[in-house]
Image 1 (cartoon, rainbow, N blue to C red):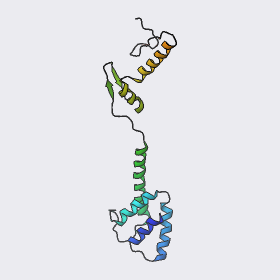
Image 2 (image 1 turned 60 degrees about the vertical axis):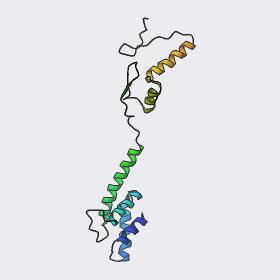
Image 3 (image 1 turned 45 degrees about the vertical axis):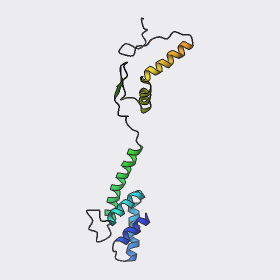
Image 4 (image 1 turned 135 degrees about the vertical axis):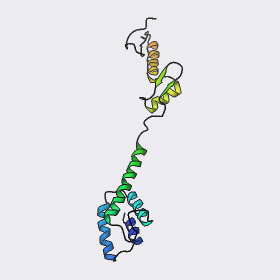
Length: 157
């Protein structure tokens, strides 16, 4: 951070070298809670004259710099949070492969991928695996109705 402050102080006129050192200590105390990237971006913005509220004749005050750094820090944190947040959905709300509409809004991305690869809802696949396992064990699986009928009723057919 001191490197960025050196750039800032060298870009604008100051009263004396001792004033510069005292000011640097003040600036460091004010900026210690912010990221180095936010400080660097803010200093660059002041040095290149892109801060509309600063006339560019003198070094910005610690408060001016802190305000601008805080804005940069908020933006950078927001960008990082967006980058790390998992996607809400793939964008596909529902699909129909000819055996009924599959609602994809409450499925995870892995489940959505499975539906798109197999053409079957995750519940259908779980029931299919269970049915195959029961048949291997020599039991006759019960048909479970999942479309509006109470779960657990046997198929009459």
